Length: 263
Image 1 (spheres, rainbow, N blue to C red):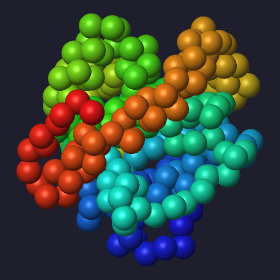
Image 2 (cartoon, one colour; image 1 turned 30 degrees about the vertical axis):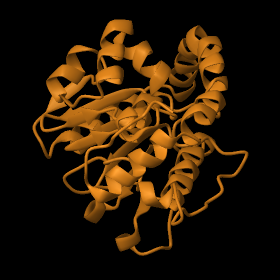
Image 3 (spheres, helix red, strand yellow; image 1 turned 45 degrees about the vertical axis):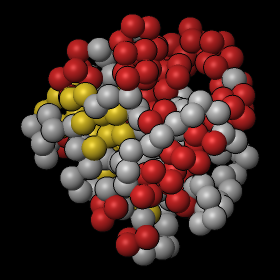
Image 4 (cartoon, rainbow, N blue to C red; image 1 turned 180 degrees about the horizontal axis):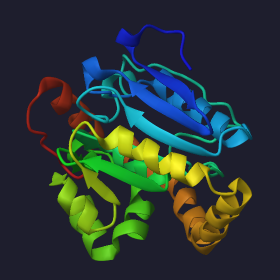
């Protein structure tokens, strides 16, 4: 999906029969996302949704880690870059519409912040046993803005969701499986193969039956999701203009503990 060099990060895609494979490709930087990669991910998810030849999708990543999250200096501060997502697109977090096709996500190594939010925007997650999860935005003076504030609840329930959202702690694949964020745990190196197996199995079923099953399930939660998505601008206003956010970014860049003031 990108003409850029792999060293700057990109999203690649492959077609395997009826399965559309979307690959995060920035391993030199722990697959952290740049603004242009967010656009490319949106383009790929939208193509999966629009192309009737694709009946299922797999989202995965090159290298040892799924993603460490945003490449923060490229999103905030004087070095920030801009990249526009088409208004008609499904975004990477499926906040603007959901892909009609089922998506299996394969994760490994570091699965931080937007990594959790992207996997929760899909349907089934296969995790390597070395996966490490953390929704750490509040450590950096911001907050989850890609759907974790409601999809974590949908998958894990209130207590387990608040436990991890408020502690901002790191937890392993076994824990993620026990609370429902992950559906299968496999040996490291097998997660993409297993995700492809599941997607190929799904693609053997009648595509319309699969799609309406997903759409019917989404009807159950879509009203609550609309309210939660509608609240995101208020969250942004509260945290993105705060002194704490700037301190969080500075402390991250300077590799030191943050000193927050609550304002």
